[in-house]
Image (cartoon, rainbow, N blue to C red; front, side):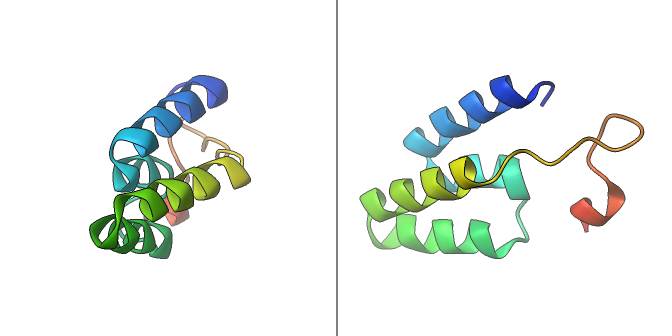
Length: 76
């Protein structure tokens, strides 16, 4: 996503609709945050939403890399 404020707003909207999707946009699909969010959403929707919003709002977006994308070590 382009700017920090806009991407955080979109991540929060996606986290309210489908919690793992918001976490996916912040951390990717191979992170522990994503799997915890997925598990909580499958068990019961409300804890998944609460956890996803907590994870998204507790950490600022990572700084962009040299080419404007995420640094390579963040993708792995």
